[in-house]
Length: 332
Image 1 (cartoon, rainbow, N blue to C red):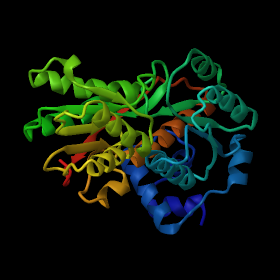
Image 2 (cartoon, one colour):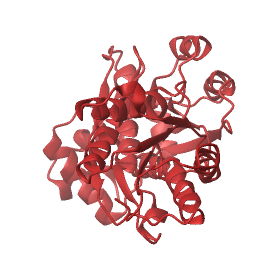
Image 3 (cartoon, rainbow, N blue to C red):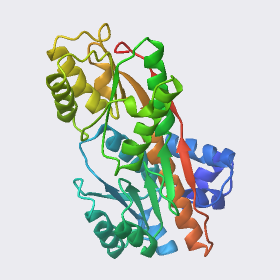
Image 4 (cartoon, rainbow, N blue to C red):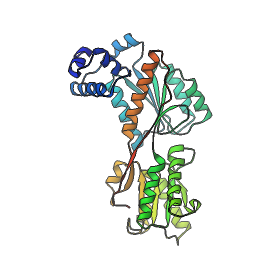
């Protein structure tokens, strides 16, 4: 299978197929026609031929904060699926939640001749900002909205706000929010702000909403609830909203351990639509974020930036916010 044969089947020119593969500008109709032919035929462009033609390595660096995360794995699936379709190879680096390594990884990946970098963002530090600014290769950030950087992120604020509104509509009056550190702008700050804003809309003082802080593990969610019940044995908690599904799963375990019925006594909701939430009993209500779509969108954006750089064109900073949906199951 050659570019010419792909072009003939898609009803486009060989130049259009080349632009598709190399991240060039293309109309949505032509892009979709080419994608379908490539998917049907299993066509893979020759990395060697493209390297000789463009001078590029055909490699993309992907930096993640952790591997053991449903969201991260879905984003990686989206990135690698899109890159593979265009004949690119992803080089993965995990910082194991050591944020100080992110600038180092950006520098090392450039030394390894990658054509671009996708960073799953956590916290924008001055050093990270300097590394992105100094990068000779295009950088796209996922999961965070950082000023001056091309980003693909989620509507974290409204996703959690809607969970809070639905819980209040169920008659819950003593709700607790379990979040993560505010250092994380999206998962920490924006999701907490969404909960507080909806709490205020219901006529409450935002500061009256109890806020606990966990890390990203189920164990920390369990410990937050255990500590709350231990320190406030008379608490009449009837709702728990968590920044992630993993935290919510741990919170549910502690509530059941304490003899609470879900949702009869306490409603619980999380964020992320983790596969595990659908296998719990009761099934976890959650805000679904489109992580795979986030990865696909980031990869497409990066390839467009790479294509623009090859043509000597400057590209504007692009910031794309993805939507969400609420999966109301049994725990609400």
